[in-house]
Image (cartoon, rainbow, N blue to C red; front, side, top):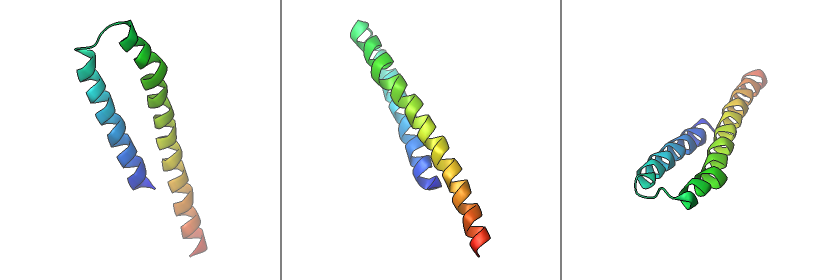
Amino acid sequence: MIAGAGRLNHCLKVLRERWDETKSRWSDQVARDFEKNHLLPLEHQTSNAIRGMEKLSEVLSRLKQDCS
């Protein structure tokens, strides 16, 4: 699960880098709306998912230890 969270975090970082590159060439109201309505919520949701995956991984590790 940690590997999946790491990949997801990496993809989020790449997405942010690419968006920053794109914003340097696309800076109209549509771009601002796209960032506000799509990218920022996606970043927030992805960060929450990553934290959830990390927490779940901790719980599963403890469970595995308790059951062995």
